[in-house]
Length: 156
Image (cartoon, rainbow, N blue to C red; front, top):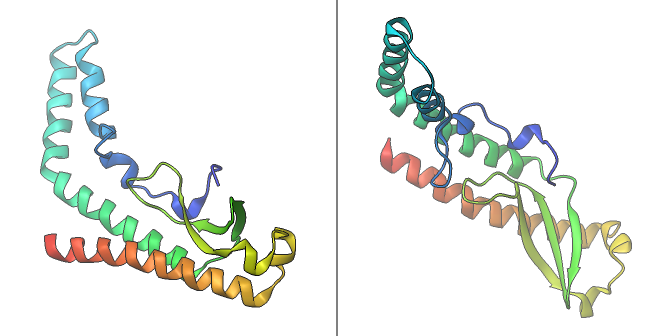
């Protein structure tokens, strides 16, 4: 799931950065401070920085909305579920955006392999097992998106 995936790529989330990443607009402004400059560059840079500061709250709000939208889209379109086996547990994962995670998926334990065996190819074709996996994935996604929606409503 490390490949480019349109369902986990937003426009504004990449601008605002995270706790670990400096925003794109701050990087752009700070990069110019290390270069030769003149009055014209300084004037346009100051205007740019002023506009960013005036609109920062709006941009951050749009980024929060993007996260919620991407999460809800993933929840409504659970497909391409991957199964894996770790020790005696069968895991399922699906595409899902989270700010605080580098991987853009969500993983859950479906069940113990002692109840279903270890043949993942067989399990992928088992409609009842995959239905259980998708239900558990959706429940985990709902918990994450509900937290983001609650936080959004509290702020805005």
